[in-house]
Image (cartoon, rainbow, N blue to C red; front, side, top):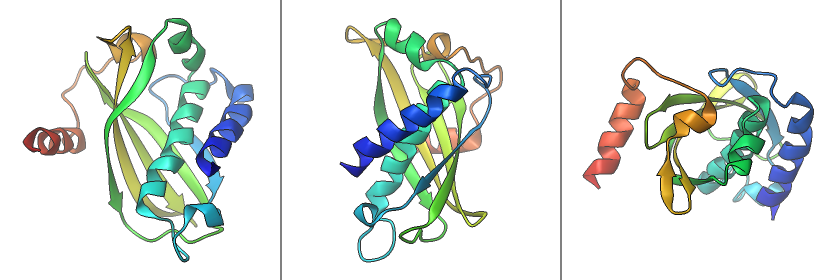
Length: 166
């Protein structure tokens, strides 16, 4: 329930900033870690991913692509995600999440989010996302209006290789 509420709050707060950034920009969102997010006193590992979801929603709002994607009939599906932990995040901490697209090809977009607490990096989350329309994969570059001339960054290559090995 806390995740849904956080998504609704992110949507409401993100609307005034709709379309203010270019799709290759980095967005910043802030969220409070509540008692619903923690085990005894620190953020549970699966909750890192729940914090990143509203940050992705905020990204799509700030770059002005959310309503265009929805109008096109496309839906997004998380194919996989990975978290790299640096330090624990305690209850009632204010978390700043910087989100950007690390890479996109004809099949997937890779969202990179970095979580900060008190100005220090606490975690990095990489989400591999597909866009589907009537069961078919849609090129995310056309939906997100991004293009990457260079090869994928090393973090994306390593993670994709690890997923392929599973």
